[in-house]
Amino acid sequence: MRGVARLLLLLAAPALGACGGGGDGRPNVILFLIDTLRADHLSCYGHAANTTPNLDAFAREGILFENCWAQAPQTAPSHATLFTSTEPAAHGIWNDVPSPSGEVLHPALADGAVTLAEVLRDAGWRTAAIADGGWLIPERGLDQGFEHFESRTRGVVDRVQRGLEWLEDNADRGRPFFLFLHTYEVHTPYLPPPGYEDRFAADYRGPMREVLARARAYAASPEIANPLTDVQKKIVNPALAEADEADTAFVAALYDAELSLVDEQFALLIGWLRVHDLLDRTILIVTSDHGEEFAEHGEFGHKQVYEECLRVPLLIRLPGGPRGLRRRDPARLLDLAPSLLAELGLEPPAAMAGRDLAWRGGDLGLDADGFVAETNHPRRQAAWRSGGRKVVLRLGPDRGGQVFDLAADPDEKRPMDEPDWIGRARTALEAYHELATDRREKFGLQPRLQGLEDLDPEQRAELAQLGYVDQ
Ligand SMILES: [Zn+2]
Image 1: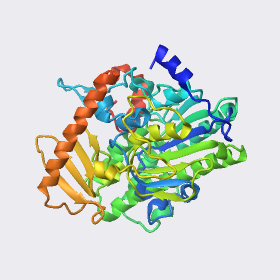
Image 2 (image 1 turned 30 degrees about the vertical axis):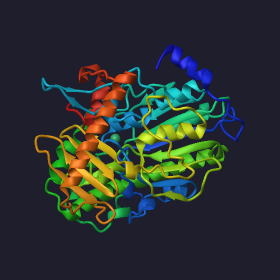
Image 3 (image 1 turned 60 degrees about the horizontal axis):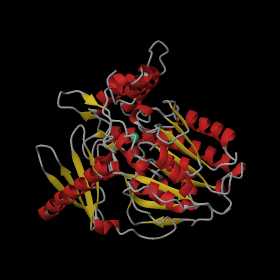
């Protein structure tokens, strides 16, 4: 958003009273986004292993949404939805868009899109993003609204350290701040610090231990320019193709080990805020953009729309807010920006599609209305939830579908013979696409399409590390 509209929004910003907030009395906001984190691997979401003692303690001080859904199982579309509160089908920021000529394109968020950071910046917040590279780059338009934007793949230890440095320099300087802090730590390749794996898989003696040793040695090779680039592809993926149940459990334990590292780093952030008397002047949100699958439905990664890829954590601590509140009603990442703006007393931009979740207590009734998630590549899939049912739709030439009762079958292992639900889901998906298309046209959200040649070599190398592109 540019020019006059910004000025008008600035003038329209309500003057909030002094309520124990940031530099000018309004609360600070930190959005800590742990990329690729499925909800059910946090112990506070019921995981058997004790992965997240610090996040669990944090959850007890605030609000935990048990059923938050991402609207897409990939980084770029999900972040664009989180930032703009518009559907992936409206903003079009998919990770990849295959063109008819066979080229894979990487769309950038339209200038006309209005992001959460833009709204906060224009209302007086100091805005910053410290992100872990990958698709979180200006070339995808995801820097819109951040006065300070830095994004390089460095891991959670470095990113939290950078976040604390930024806070040292910028907190309490007359304006409240909005800090978006992002890490890819639990994304592939899973290479936790040596020994962390034994917190979760001390008894495993199978072949994946040797694969982990080789992957670590390869990643540390000083003679290879971008060693992480090939770890997953050359070393881990061939082993995954042969993995049995115990091997797969070990791979999931490596993910848990990395989550355990993230949890420790989160404790540093919380500790810093407490010591600097900022915790009770800051709205702190922890969430993820999508989950991760460990062969529950035949694949690794995050390319499908089963629960392991869509259900993400959502933890919120509000100054003076509820403690230990567990919300069971469904929430969407789409709703996060409007809910935060409502909490801050700011009007959401007209283009935002999400609703105010009324964090302190309420129920949007989303389950009755139904809601959608989808993915476009490498194959098209959509999911629709309503009335306790979940429908997984295949949208390619094979137009099949599966119906699940999530209460009775939360792991989605027993599809039901209910073809009428598949028909209802297709109708709902069509209506959703119509609404999204209208939103795109009405608010100028048509994305800019671009090829990889628009990225600098270091960015390409980092994307290859994460397995998103061939270098
Ligand atoms: Zn992601």
